[in-house]
Image (cartoon, rainbow, N blue to C red):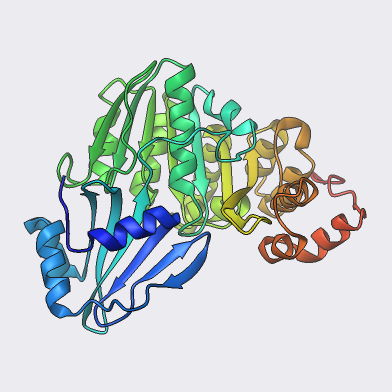
Length: 365
């Protein structure tokens, strides 16, 4: 553990419930609290401060990566405050850092306000599960909550490959091996390939970044493993297209057919400020590989996935609009924010007025 010169600022932010800290040389420090940016007045870190901070929190390897590439990602444990994921980068030639607070306790699915079907998805024995969303949408936290559900209720060997390690898991009913790119393995791709020889039940990859990673994920799922990962996409159908974009045009049909066989679920997420003005609540779109979803993937009818999701409530699926409508009706969020976060605001506006169109008709037509 260590105490850096930024200790008081980090401590202040944690007490205020901040999720992120933006620390820029010669600029005010900005916190993100409940999704909103707030400046810390009266404190502007200069070059001397930033130089000292980097010496206190960075390893020689971190500094080398920063010098060579302009970026470095690492984890930092601040004494008496907590653990943070840190990105060190350069902007306008000046030093900047972004801190993300990692809660010490792995959150529970219900505590996060996630739909109960998330736990059912975690009980699957094989296949690919993707958690998607934009940066800061809580993907890593949702993934961690699913792993902790397994740890409490199932018996599995779980291998995680992360850059850096975020949540630290303690063995309960499951056993965990957490590998960090750099200290423990050379790359995501290498660790993912070798994980297949380490008797895993579940392999967790911090992020699917390229074709090689997804090739190995498909192989792992095809041989009876579960693979969980994240993607920077906004919804389920866009996630499928993003995966196909990893491949050349001539290869996409085979990949799509393999995806139809091996995909288990896609959970897309957006965070919405609560109506109370304090805190955020997750809004989710959930696609599960039902016979209809599988058929749409096989027949390359990706444009009909959204309609199939809306029509699949009995199977545990939901669209963003359906989830947002539920959150509004339960008083968790306001109509204004729901419309702002909706994929289809016009349709949600009708739903809020009690008008519903039959979105499930002719899905396979």
